[in-house]
Length: 94
Image (cartoon, rainbow, N blue to C red; front, side, top):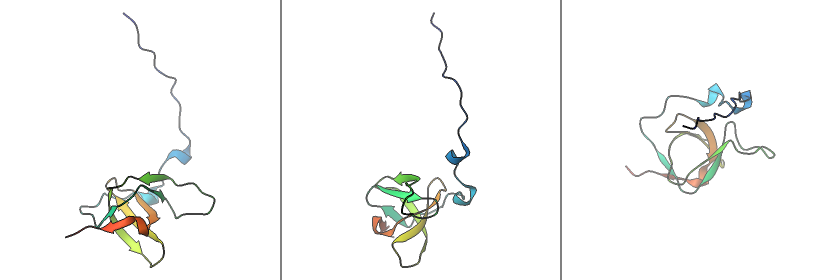
């Protein structure tokens, strides 16, 4: 009988953690849907910074704030509070 070989365990750097300021309880209802795959940022899009991740098309989010500019602050079903492009969001009916 062959034995399973496990990979060597590694500790991820602190930069792999989601900042506490970007976590909150998941919303109980959603206000918008992501219409195309698009990036999100923990603080906001900065010229040289890569995005922290992407929303898939169809992802449901709750709009938290929008000051009229191109960036909206939203929270997703995991409770991840981030900034993303408002142009890629569509209000949910109802």
